[in-house]
Length: 338
Image 1 (cartoon, one colour):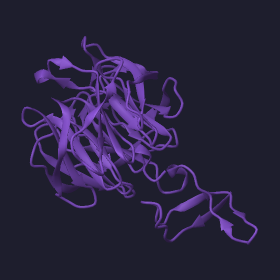
Image 2 (cartoon, helix red, strand yellow; image 1 turned 180 degrees about the vertical axis):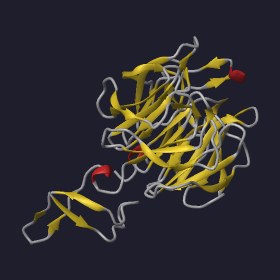
Image 3 (cartoon, rainbow, N blue to C red; image 1 turned 30 degrees about the vertical axis):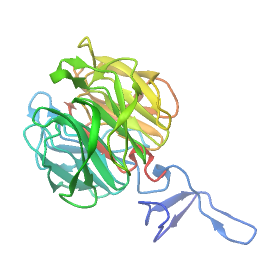
């Protein structure tokens, strides 16, 4: 296998300067053909960061963990966020990750995904979206619903490469929180949650077109009503995993939708354990979804699935500690750069 150092690639967002791994060939005119494939195989991409949340038994933590999505194994330390809190959702472009506000604080942090170290201040959102859904395209990130200080349907947008640049993007179809979002390069999919002041757990699935903005529309319904689902997505599918059903029981079921086609979710498989993930640190690439933060099982284990292949999750490795209610982001989530 050969490797080539490319100094500049401008026709693929976020792929400037990686090492590209693969077998090269020459065509009939003597031109070299560079291999292409999933993002994580083009070098320098496919990193996932899990951050903040609640640590058993000592409370909120500001720690971040790093994983390489294509390679099973235990997480390593990435650095620290500016503060620790539960329900800090994550979103990212191909270079920068943002951790949204959590309990008791409206500050957003950002990190450069390729460089381990502490987070920097992105800015303070004008409204509180703790417990909302986060999703993104390659330029914009969104935090939808959550507390405001009561529940809201507002979708708050931000420009990922800037700092403090928030804007009003539209509204979800329902007022609520404790739902969770998955991304494709163009659409955000929002699964489940609670409405009616937290009294009603719903099956609702919304879809939001990120480039155009405006209000979300109803996509379909989950088979099982759930709050606190974990999520993952690529260009084709979005997954909702685990959570708490309308009978307040934790579930290990995974459901999926085909992002391009509105409709109801279908069974995908199961996590290794029933879990109230609490918007925990899911990260994904063009091929894999990683789920972590199993509660009340209280385990540091991470599960993974191959997004295009239905079936039960497998063991990925362990986080550095037993956390839950944390956030996650990755430089290839939703199939960015695929």
